[in-house]
Each structure stands twice: as C-alpha cells, then as structure tokens.
Length: 163
Image (cartoon, rainbow, N blue to C red; front, side):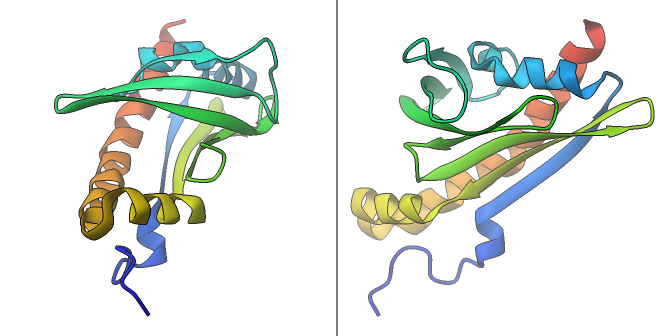
C-alpha cells in the first residue's frame, strides 16, 4: 500500500474535542455559535465568515477567512447539523473536516463542547495537495485544533457570560 501521509497517525488523533461550562442557557450559546458572522470574535484563526446566500440551516454554505502569521486562506463550508439549543456543525468543503458545537444543559448553565474531526475527503485532499509533506501538514492541523479549540471556548465563555 502506498504511503498516504496518515500512516502512523492513530485515527483518534485526527479528532479533538473540549468542553467548557458557561453560565448561560443552551439557547444563548446556540445563537452565538450558529451566527457564523461572529466567528471572528472568538476564534484565534478564523477572522471572518459570511454566508454565500440567504439560505440557512443544513445544506447552507458559508466562506471563512483564516489567518496565521505565515499565511491567509479561505475555506468554503456547508452546514451539516443545525439543532437549536443542541448542535451546530459544518463540514469544510463538504467532506474534509467537521467542526461543531454541542450544548448540553447542566445545573446553572450549559456545557459547550467544540469538536473537530479530519474526514476522509480531507485525507484525499491533503495527499493530493501536499504529497510527501502531507504528514507534516496534518500534524499542523491537529496541533492547531488542540490549541485553538480551548482558546475559542474560553472566548465564547467570556462573551456569553459578559452579555
């Protein structure tokens, strides 16, 4: 079998999730995270998002502008879960990576979980785009998710509890 850039990376490492308690009801958190035009307010990488059309809900598409010191890029994402008060998620280019927020009511507020998962389409895309450098690029994305998710959740918590 030909190396694909993912050999030796356990499948469990291609996903990450973290949670935070927020002293606000789930509906408030859902309203925040489902308004993708606000994503740049708390994400350490995403600077702005905009809807492609008036469509909303599962199947709707949006574009995100992301920035790191070494590069700036845009992604196109499709909403794959839209359950008010419970879950809001999207897939980058429809099949490369899944990002999402789940809310669970707990005493005094909400447990918010942000998750990220590399999808099969992402593996194909990275092999095609990066070739022998795919493993390095995958490792960079895994690292970014592991640091970015807790930072994003902390910012969401601050914003929600301040409002």
